[in-house]
Length: 412
Image (cartoon, rainbow, N blue to C red):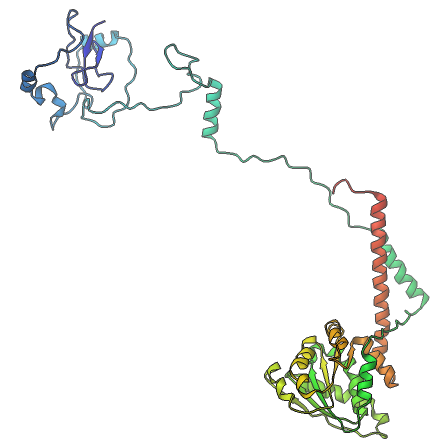
C-alpha cells in the first residue's frame, strides 16, 4: 500500500489521507511518492535545509496563515468520488487551537464506552478487567445520587397500657368507706426530737429582767411554718419577764416580728394578771446582711435566740457572734433546717433546738398550754399524709407483685 510521509513529524500515512494520523498536519497539498520511491524521507543536507524558507516548507508558521480545516474549500467531483471510494477513517479528535498545523500532540480522551457497543475482546487490544454488565453498573452508580444505606425499620411495639383499673378501684373503695362510715382519721402523735426539752430548760432558767438577744431571720415568705414554731418559744420568753433585744437583717422582718408578738399577747390575756406585761416589742432593722453581725457581739447577753427558716442564719451567728460574747445560743428553725443543725446541737454549740411542727407541739405541752386550733387541725392532716404514703407504698408493692406473676412483657 502506498504511503506518504508527514512533512512535519515524518510519520508515514496512507496515500490520500487529508491529515496526519499523529500530529494532525494537513496532508491534502502533499503528493504521494511513486511505488519505487523509498518509504522513508531522505535526510536533507545542511545546505539544502538552509535554502528552504518557512513560507515554502511550512506555510502554517506564517502569521496570516489560515488552515484548510478552518475555512471551507472547493473540490471537484472526481476528487470527491476518489475520497468516497476510500475506506472510512476514524473521526479525528477535536482541535483545541485553530490555525496551527502540526504543533500540538493529539489528545486522547479516556472515556467509558457504552455497554451495548463494548466488544468482548478485540484482537490486538488489552483485555479489560471488567465486562459489559459491570461497566453498565458502574455507569449507573456514577450517574445517580448516592443513597444512604438504612436498616429495615423494625415494627413499632405497641404502647404499654396505662389503664390500671385495680389502682382506681382501691382509691375509690377507700374514699367510699371513709365517707359512709363517718369515721375520722386517727390523730398522729408528733415526734419528740432531741433538743426540745433542752431548749425549754434553757429558757425556763432565765431570771426576770435577763437580757436576751433575738435574731429574727424570717419574713412573710416563710411565716406559715415559722409562726407555729416561734409562737410557743416567744410566749415562754414573755412569761419569764425577760428583756428582749430583737434585731432583723431582713426588710420585712420587723413587721413580721411585731405581728407574731401581737398574736402571742392575745393568747396570754387570761394569764397577764399574775405576771408583768411587755406591751410593745422594739425591733431594729440592720441593713448590710451578715457583715453587721460582729457589731452585735459587743453586747452582752444571757441567752441568744435565733428564729430562722434556714440553717445558714444560725450558722452565721455561731461563727461571728457566739465566740465573742459567749452567750448560749437557742435555735428555733423550720423542719427543713433541722438536719443541718443537728451537728451543732450534738457538739454543744446549741443549747437547744426547736424545729417544725413536732417541736412546736411538744413545746406547747411543756408549757402546760393548749395548742392552738390550727395546730390541732394540722395533727389530723399529718396523720392523713401518713396514711396516704402508706397507701402509695401498698400500690407499689401490688404493682411489682403483679408484674412478677404475669411475667416479663415481650415488647420491652
